[in-house]
Image 1 (cartoon, rainbow over the protein chains, first blue to last red):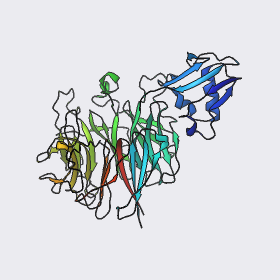
Image 2: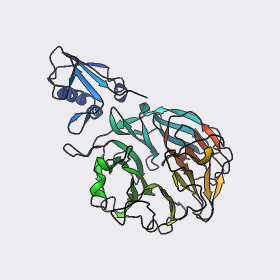
Image 3: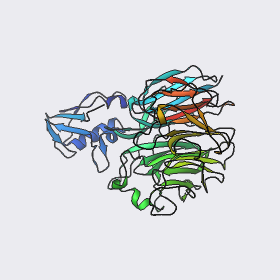
Image 4: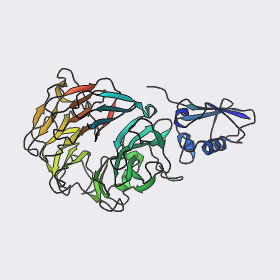
Length: 87
Length: 359
């Protein structure tokens, strides 16, 4: 199972959404689709129309910057980062 | 005893202030909505629900809703999109209105979405396509930084088919068929810049309508304060006597159509109250003359800005007025503007103020 780490800004928006979830999805996009099925509306918080990741949502698979079609391996670590600096 | 609530949209969440009919002592709740930037928040009298239009830099735009007067909140953006493949994206949700069981949200790029299920889902109502100027306003290159798209909507009581919408920097449009067709309502306004179309190209900041005379409307424009006596079909200027033609906030007395309030600001880069002296200006004769109201407002180095949705008036027999500043102060008057007090001093940047009286 791959591990997905979600940002702290996301978890308060959905009941019982943990910071850390496991997935067997083959790509980032399909992992987000899995999350959407369990927490409806979550996809909109990470993805814009296109479809594509939102401008300031950065996803890394095994520390490499990823897109929706990036492959996830069975032991991958996926980090979803809310990426803006400043106040 | 009636309850008076203020809904304060700020750059760091929604705040709700509560008082009774005396409107002297206020309690503060917040930040709500997970501290998302809240552009506008309203109370829908027909359902009793509150709505907050919010846009997170990370997580996009959504409308938050509360059915328990702001104690708990949930958000939705289901349907709040121009769709896959459409070059227009929703950068923010700027303005809300509710009437006849429908809730509408104005967005940027300019469009209006509507919900008929209490904010759980949304569908596109109109982009005002085909109106003069619409060929240009969808082009991001034509939008200045911070563009709000549909910067405000003005409902007509509970009649969901009739309302006005402002396209920022373009002008006001009226619909009487629920958004299927529109008519520009800018005749007589001033513009100090070239315009491509006769009927649009005006910078309407805030539009208000008298509850006691539906034909009487006022607006604070980028250039001047203007009045209409025919429901917005034609306008004439009433700026003379004010210290500045520029401002955002405006409010009309609920029981006297000739009494109207504005907050003039310097029109340059500062966009703050002139001379560092906080003041609300009032006319009691439809704009023939103006009074400067300052009692209780700071008069030394008070370089306060007030944005377009950040002024409100309640409907009590002796109305109360409220305005919030870009530096987080909230001022209130419970005597029609004669005297003022600061009821919150250290909020985040205030973008909107709405007042609700609940019996």
